[in-house]
Image 1 (tube, rainbow, N blue to C red):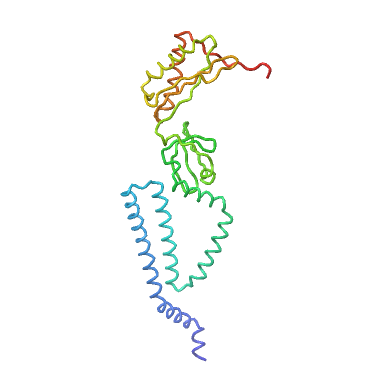
Image 2 (spheres, rainbow, N blue to C red):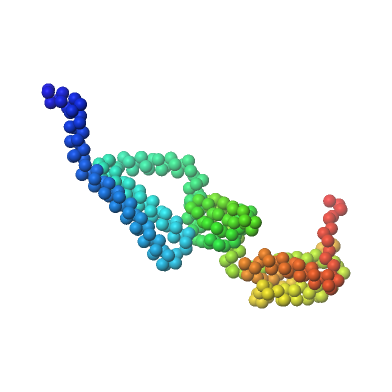
Length: 274
């Protein structure tokens, strides 16, 4: 009876605390040793994997994505090992994590769709960082492919974020894959124009421009004959990086050459019935 009273007294609590601490200290010390060693090991593995990926010249986006997944998997395994070493039952903990994961998954279906879309983009590579693409009604250069969104920089330096879910399921036009691009320019000329002379003038303008490729050869064709104009289609090829400036130069140089030859550009005529 005296022993029980001694346990429940203040001095008994202190003795019991230190006894429990001494008995539990080996588990506690070993658990924290595992934790600190595991943290440094994960950092070492992460650096090693990145070096291997760089050496093998893997795609930078894929390398970062795989490294991020690896480090989080290792962190979860380390955490489970740590609490298991402390004596905490891990089976119930894993069950709780599974239930929580299901709940979060149901509430974040859109984000999971974007995550899956990001994986598809990284694996199948419809575009890469640095490519110029058109998707979801916008055109821009791919600046970064993240797990959930893709970042584009437009021609006027606006930053555009497109969710990977809709991006991977939509139509993507990649202007950079082939390395060169064709311009589709149109001039509306008066019916008084000598078509052969106009075509010769345009061909001379295209062939004299340094950025217009010789192969494939540039083309000029009559695209349409409307009620009030001859539509002349101009189709030179150029490298992707020269596309914008070359398009502007061809239009300007053709206008100057037409003026010298007395070729009249037909202004747009609106249908009066409408």
